[in-house]
Length: 134
Image (cartoon, rainbow, N blue to C red):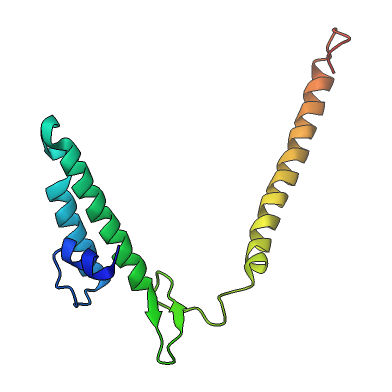
């Protein structure tokens, strides 16, 4: 779907540049007006097709908002926070995840050792007479 067609479906002028919040508000209004659950069964198929077009227009405009053209004419992707990624984004995902991994492994290790200790104490206190049980 083209951007102009998407803008017209959401109620904007074809050459306008609405903000993300304006697009979201227009989508909510149009989705409320065209939602298939609001129509009788006889008109539901038409309402579903209209609703799908509105949803497609919204995704088209929202994805177009994140992609901006810089002054040099190259495309740069902007994350949801609005801050452009420098040099392709952060490359230290492993360094960020290491502390969490250590926390999880430490918790499992300490929990496992105390669990094994409790199992040994219970086994000593209540020995089993069944030779097939540990």
